[in-house]
Length: 191
Image 1 (cartoon, rainbow, N blue to C red):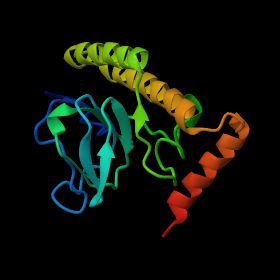
Image 2: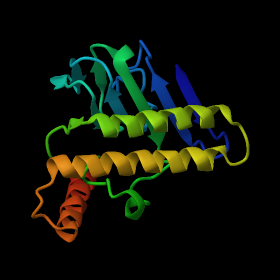
Image 3: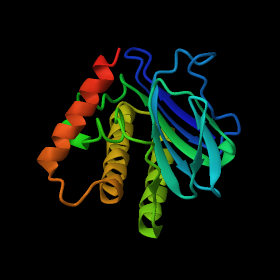
Image 4: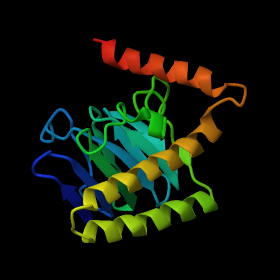
């Protein structure tokens, strides 16, 4: 199932992909125009994922955030639930004060973060998926705002979970913000 929203005037796009058998992205190929950030959840058994031709193990019930310039290929894409959105729909850099994910979930310099979900976290994400599904079918003047609000909530939930799993408790929020800003500067000026 591919649920999609696109604003023809602003080119803002948001998608929710559920059990899509062909869900992969070849950045250096046919999907060159795809400039979407991706949040993917492996709901099935552990599987292989290839990101820029490097193989990783994508654990069961884990979330992985993927950048706009990354090619990816899932061994079992039918077990993936994914949210994709472009900068026109929600710019995480411009709204970092809202979601605190720039330089951490996205634009980070560390290894791939496979964010493991416990039962309570899975329950929250499943509830959010149901609300997303309802909003994709509710076509009116505030649909984009509602989808954007739900996306922000998803990003905040994933960021909180990732902080618990990947950030040292001794690292204060202000020090983490400096690290995130550094990662973003590296991303922008690497070339």
